[in-house]
Amino acid sequence: MVMPRFQDLKLECWEDSGKLGFHPPFICLRGDSSAADVLLAATDELVASGVCSHLILTVRHHSRPKPIFKIRITFLPESEDLAQMSITRNENEASFEFTERGLIEFRRVLEVWRDGGEDFATHPEGSRKASRAKRNDHMRAKDLASGELWFWRSMSP
Image (cartoon, rainbow, N blue to C red; front, side, top):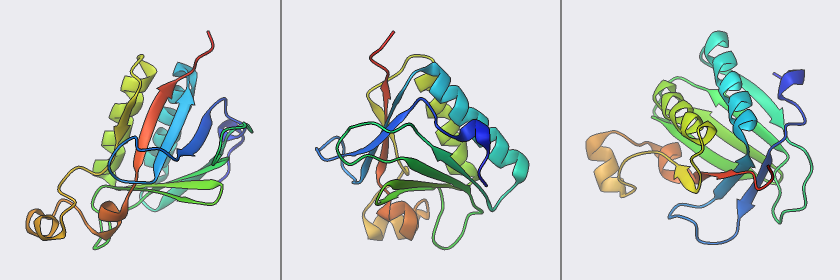
């Protein structure tokens, strides 16, 4: 669903080419507390719409390498493929898929970001080793294939 309040956001989104973490793609968000508030409002909208809902957010154009201008956020039920979250990229679109457990974690990190935290990431929690993932059942195929979502503060006042 496309909603006007989630379009042309004062937010930069890109894929970092470097080695920020351990599990690419490394999707980065840069913005101030108002950007975090908009993303929190988007999660509220998803919860209100229920499982299997999605929102499409667009961000202002910027000149970073590997830019992303569209973010699709989806709220899904836990399944054989997804236990927590999946962070992926396809061309200039990022896709954030969350189960209830993943959406709770996403909201938690958005609140940290809104309150001044930066230079940190979220990703599915658990071992990426397939044998351990099967034993503890915390991660499924999409969780295992997920990248990381990094948060940065805006440099401007």
